[in-house]
Image (tube, rainbow, N blue to C red; front, side, top):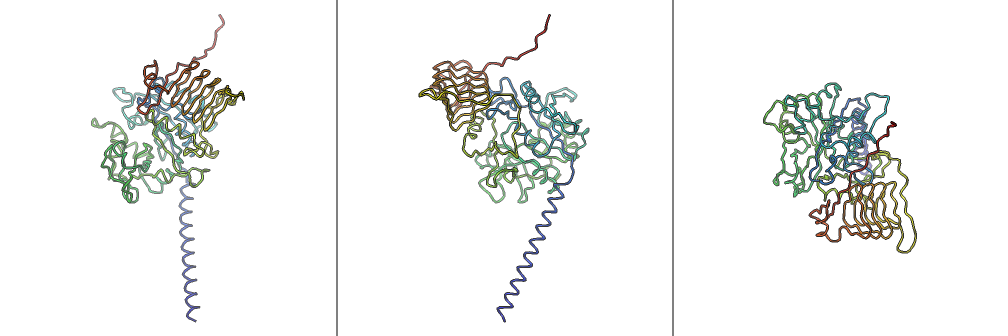
Length: 456
């Protein structure tokens, strides 16, 4: 009798637990449904005007967002793909320094020919709307000088994202988080080993990820709650509720002591005055990725960091997945022929191992290992390319050898020449840079521009 009663009580407790679990699940689903299906107006600003001086000579003729990456892409393609894949189609790209290459790429790859007027990707040059007609003085000033675009669109939310990092991000999840938290501003943050705190903008948070402080490049910056070995590093990506953003931009523009930057001025000034939250980038999930896929973000601000990010692509299962058809990395659609590997003779066999090879490239008896090759590259008989990044239209002569190098567009490596084998010799070369880690960067020549002829 006692056993039956105990079993009955256990069954009743189990039934109540299941019922409570169903209710909690229903509540979560209802919340998600309300957030997902709520129609909100979002306009995005992509900050693409940076000089990228630490990436010189790759930025000698182009802005940092226009630097090639991964054989066929440009750095700016990552943020634009993230926005479009997330369903954010109203995008202004703010440009400034050395913008011609970027403008051409936006024209070739990102012109939106749509019947829907709210779908657009528009490059916006510096408007010089301030009284003294300045160029952009900081990230906040860049948005302030285009505040008329916000006022004309009258969105619920404004997404402000940089254009100089390599990452994939489902921005819709960050927007849902911002709405769920009833935040006025949300900052994308990535957990980082605290030994790097002296190099980063660190966000101090409470246990619920509300922001209680900002610390710029401080080795003693506070760690993440419950994780003393890591700090929350700002990714420089923000979502603002529109009314707050407009009000703070106007106030900041009138402050002569401000450097007019979001990370240094506007966001720190909001602590304690408005609900601010950090969005943990590691919680972000990309549709179509396996559950075990970790979030990937790289700051390619230096030549060594840029080189390593390209090298990440060589892995059998790369941390940066370019092959997810549900989350495509979009770029310009060039009419290139397929890559080709020719000759099958001893000492004259065109082949590539653990490498990425873009369209139009021909390995004519050359050997490539652990490298990223751009469009229309030629690798001739007996040539060897290892652990290198080769931009478009390069020509590697017969029996030439290239190792741990970045070759800019249009570089011609002479027959039998060696690059990356004698660093002292490479340092003495014209148009050649060697980084601290020994990466050899060779400048290319300007591409020829075809112009129309006129009959006279």
